[in-house]
Image 1 (cartoon, protein in one colour):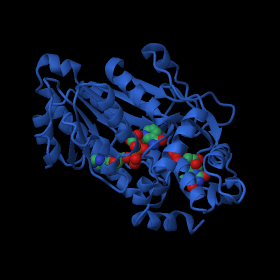
Image 2 (cartoon, rainbow, N blue to C red):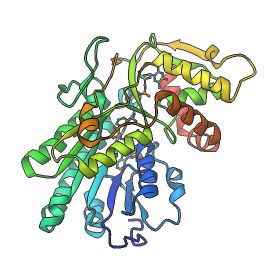
Image 3 (cartoon, rainbow, N blue to C red):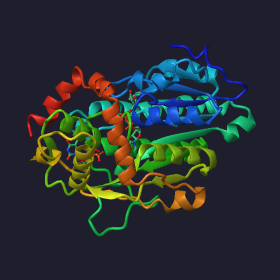
Length: 365
Ligand code: NAD
Ligand code: TYD
C-alpha cells in the first residue's frame, strides 16, 4: 500500500475520496484542498481514466495523500480505513463512459456493482465499531448520475428525486444497481448514506472520450467532429466546480438516506454544444481555414441512445441553498481556454491506448 503515513491531520479526521484521480474526483479534491482544512486521502485504481497528473497541484501538500488501489480490494480498503479513520467517504470511483460500456460491459459490472458492494461491506464493518458520536456523524456519499432515470420525451418534466429508475445502457444500469445497493445498506444496516444524481459535467481534466473535450481535441487536430445520429439528443450540462460545490453542500448538510438531484438548468442539443465549441474556438484560436463548424460530421448513432436528460434541482437549491455559479456560456469558455492552455495534458492522455479506443469506437461507424 502507498503512503498515508505522510498525512498531516492537525487533529482533523480526514475524508476518503475514491476515484479522486479521475475528472470530477480530481476537481473535487483540488477544490476541497483549496477551501477546507480537513485533510483528504485519495484512493484510485488509476484505470485509463485516472491520472495522477490531475493532482499534481497538491504535490508537497501534507493535507493530501494518495493510495493506489481498487475499491473492491477488501484486503487493501479494510486496513486503510482503520489507519485513516475517515469521517466521510465520497465515492466517485466508477467506469463512467457509455460508449465503452456498450463495447465492453464487464468492467462496469465489476467496478460499479461488485466494487461498490465490496466497498459498502468494508465501510459497514468500519462504521459499526466507531464510537457513538463518530458513528452518527459519519457519511458515505455516493456520486451518481441522472442517466439512471432513463430517457425523457421532449415535452416531459425534468427528472427529480422521485423519478422512477429506468436505465437503458450498461453504464446507467450498473450505476442504478450501485444506487440501489447504497440505498439498501442504509435501509437495512443503518449506514448513513447520501446519494447525488447529477447531469452531464464538463470542465478541466475531463478525459477526451467525452463529448466536449473530444470535440475540442478533434477540432484543434483538424479531425472530423463526429456527431452521433441527428445530433438533436439533449443533455443538461453543469460545470464541474458547481458539481463539486453541490457535493460539499450535501456532505455538510444533506439528510441521511436522502437523494439529491443536481443540474445546471442548461439543456442543450449535442449539435448546439458542438457549434458553441466551434464558435468559442473560432474566437480563441482561429484555424485560418474558416470556422471549425466545417469539421462537423454526422456518424451512425449510438445503440440505445437516450434522447433527452433534464434535471429539476429544486430540492438541493431550496433545502441546501446551493446554486451553480457558471452559466453554460461562461463554463464552456473557461473549459475551452483550459484545454488551449493545457495542451500538454491532452497530449499526455491521448498517447497509446486512447488511439486504440478511437479505432474501436469510430472506425466502425
Ligand atoms: P472518470 O472516468 O473520469 O473517473 C473515474 C475514476 O475512478 C478514475 O480515476 C478511475 O481510475 C477510478 N476508478 C475506476 N475504477 C476504480 C476502482 N475499481 N477502484 C478505484 N478507483 C477506480 O469519471 P468521472 O466523469 O470523474 O465520474 C466520476 C463519478 O461521477 C462516476 O461515479 C460517474 O458515474 C459520476 N458522474 C459523472 C458525470 C459526468 O458527466 N462525468 C455525471 C454525473 C455523475
Ligand atoms: P458523452 O459525453 O459520452 O456523455 P453521456 O453519453 O454520458 O451523456 O456524450 C454526450 C452526448 O454526446 C451523448 O448524447 C452522445 C453524444 N456524442 C456524440 O454525438 N459524439 C461523440 O463522439 C461522443 C463521445 C458523444
